[in-house]
Image (cartoon, rainbow, N blue to C red):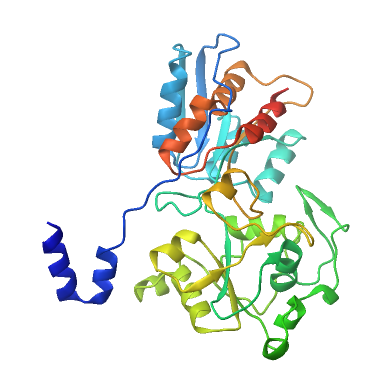
Length: 367
């Protein structure tokens, strides 16, 4: 079989030969032994209603394992698209809103207008790193392989991709505390400390989906401090652009190719895209602030949350402030954040499981 594949690869050319020699992807393994094992704290019965992102296989496995402890609980799921998560909560049709990413401001505003308080937010997993089966990936910032820049801070990402702003959003509240002027704009490589021939070169920046997308929201929250003003020089296009796909390309590939060809370029993209296209670029390590260590993106630094622009998956619940969460919902969340629940998430490979420290922080929100 191997000889036939080799012959076919030689016949079709070096590009195919290279693919034929690429080893199969090896999923990362995570040590979940420090997570608490699930033990039910109370007997629960009835119907648990979950609305939101179409993660049927994952939800089915979680629900089946949960029923192993609570045999009289039944699951009713309506997993059509992400928007149904908050729609179900706002209309009272759902007990749990399932989100493949953090809910944007519009859904939060709708919930708060309906109930007068914020929803309970629980992060149950981290987004993927480079797994081809993964989803909700974190962001990599890439430069041309000849670019000598050592790394970026979140403030520098704000300077490059952001613009002067009068304030930003803290949840659903507008605050002027994060306002900044144009003096913090970064438009040349010299402003990032590069010297010589690089000092006066303009930064040519690429990206995608900066209007109501998970990745724009991630950058706005973590780097822009809730601001929504972007550098107008950004060369941006939607990832789902039909015209681009008709040409046999994806927007992600275009970003990668642009940075490969242009020494002055920078772009944000996913590691799995770099891997799949054997991208000849440099991935920049990131630091949360000046003086803090640069962190290289990896499955490990996504798992321990040390990489600043990793992503997450969430559930949302309607808990009245000062009142306990419903028994069914609380037991399900406790199971979800247990060693058994997180092992199901790890085995499913869509997301990266939480560490024991992260799970403990989320569990504390239940009290």
